[in-house]
Image (cartoon, rainbow, N blue to C red; front, side, top):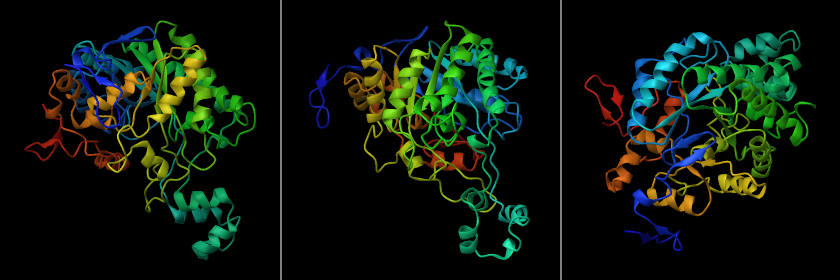
Length: 433
């Protein structure tokens, strides 16, 4: 029986889940997604140093699929064939057989759709002040004996940052040839995703990584890949065009995009709306909206550790904790969706950020704030959230506590788990069921 929502949603009627928008299908480009519950990409660190599919990765994603989400987005996979620790890779054709089997194993669970997120990232080094000063000694004789105050005063801003936080490559460091190679890398990864039998691909244009850095207002490159909004957007449009040439129009292609950088001088939701309209017109089938997670405001790492982009204010906004209200980031997808509709485009928008109650998700859909409900930590805590809610058993859901224990594990490149999971006899942990 339908019921009116109290509190924040007095004008909306909450229908039984089986007649809700949340559990109705949606056309996303060439795909029909069976329901609007969308699992955004979350790095698991369950791969190995070769970036391969492991039994633990297969178990994790099969478990999500069994729980009833309409879309499972696999964790970010590197598009370059370079060492990147236990992060999955799709940077060479040798990855295809194992990824094809992973796609088949997930599809075997039912109507669920599954796509990989593909990412490019720049070089980063651990904080090593001894080595950093040794490199600077030729330019600043005696700098190894300076105090930190003297170093900060005398070094150039970039030199100070690389000393204090550890070396980090920036998009301004890339040659024009290196920039122009990036679309081909994304296109090759998308081709592999199609050969693997995935239902589409998500291009990672968010957070602290290469593509988001080009889109950001912090981009200090000159034209043609910096300066104005159009200049900052140019590489993303080239990526989309090259991917479309490689996979055709009948393969679902979308992107993960920042609704806001949330750092000084960074892009705003107005920038994101402009980018979204242009990217949708260029051929993207969906826009998945995130926020923050930038290097510009991250905390200084401990000695021997690398900078982590989710330790500052922008990172907190990216993964809102228990102190934040439900649907804390909903204004961002709502603004982007409104801009798309005003431009005459029906491109679906995914919103995320502390949405893991049925009434919150359904109210956002009824209110036209988004088209698909991104639920990362909520589904990590209980992969059966969709099945339980659809069956009218929301009280049985193991609800996320939003303490970000999972994020703390990610920061250390340890296997990402939820603190609510049951312990195995061997001391490990696994998702319920």
